Image (cartoon, rainbow, N blue to C red; front, side, top):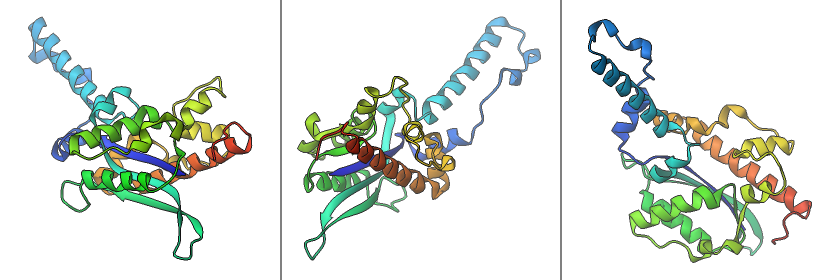
Length: 237
């Protein structure tokens, strides 16, 4: 079994990301109407402000579905069962980091290829939250962009346990946030590191909360999975 999660940032140049990140939302009160007497110029300036603010939202709202087309994986976290040198099984947690433009990490291609090798060397199920709607499509795009082979094991839905899809059949209220389900299950959640909208801020600042966030998601995913197993909602071994 492999439990996994990925963290992403917008797939644009780092310089452009930092420029947008450091800008603040403009407000219509910033529009100096006294300098613009022509109604068409006023309207054009209002449109410019609107476009600016919408671009900021598109870039940094990681919960916006359209961002998936621009997402670049920067971290892949996984927990999987492996044998030690003595032949005993244990659970290994691994965080693979890649894609830093300054060369301080392996490349995005190497990171994704390393993860595909883990998938190919383990057995299903492959477990995550909204992985059919987010993580797996992003990994497929990364494989296409970087010319690497997507693992055949992830092509078959019978190998995959997407907890978001499972929980949709359990709860009438259907949040798209892992932490909301975790709290519904009664699990403790560190809200300070739970907000995925801060991923790029942590990434840009080199903040360790980025890694804490990923580890918490892995832990919550694992706990929800086993609780569903215990309740016989899931039967996969």
